[in-house]
Image: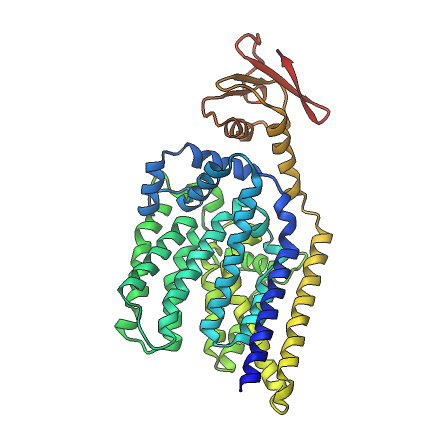
Length: 460
């Protein structure tokens, strides 16, 4: 058995190295990206929020609608590195690698198969329609939510797959992870349901088995109420107003499945329901608890967004772990079946399957990115960078922009200049946002205009 064990370790190490290289190949360009409008808003509000209030909101997780864990990320990196996007990008990519490792750990705990882990990892490493996760700092909320959502799930499942129960210290750590996930993003409320599904599938229905998931579910009650009721409710934002109807669910899932299958357009209603139902029916037909859990994870982790208006593909980040678990387990079982009569060929067949999955998914990723140049991703940061680099003034100055490159009702220029100068009192007036052009420039220390792609100083 020793040569087989050594060979297996070597293959696992090689697969891990290839997955990391695959991840780096598709994400390295994001290192050079600048801030975007959402970054400026998120960073400015995090920077100007009193530190005691921010820390209090992290503990009292239901209070702040602005996702305090993400705000703490912005504030911490800004305090350490200043107004420079590279440290933010490197931190996000490092967190993406951690999430990849956590996904592998989750798949190993549920499937018990290193082969399944390899197949799932190469699929999870990058998906072109989820690329905002790795390319936009503003999606740090999803990255952080995944870290603590999946981290909490792994902490829970590690003893449960052995028939044991989490101890006091581990249970406390799970609760902390769950609260941190809710501090990052609202999709975290699906974690108790996911853990309950695991208990229903893999253990007997006893009170002791479901006590911790039920406790986590109770912790969501003040959070859900605060997000949906009151003057600070998230549902007050039109982009977060749910529409609980079959039509909305069908339309949303048509879009989501179009993302997952890298389609040029969303699936129709019939195809959406078919592609949702077939994986469930297959799992039931083969009586696989792993597939049922994977399907439940994928659907439940998407449920909080299933009745909301369209959001980007990045909202599928947590649920994507369920899809790759499903695909990885299926590929693993097919390899096992194909090599049953010739077991010695199993490592070669598994390696070939791994390579084919990476090649096919990589080809799909590259083709989709060539077909869509994603100007929405690369365009806006140019305007922000231009303003930050060309406008340098002393502290406490008063600035007037007779013309600029931003929209009429946009506060982004104010955020950029105050952050870049680290001066929350910097006066930045824009004629676009004033009732009329000031009669005199005497009230301002500096006056600028924008012409031919650059800012020009008119005073002094």
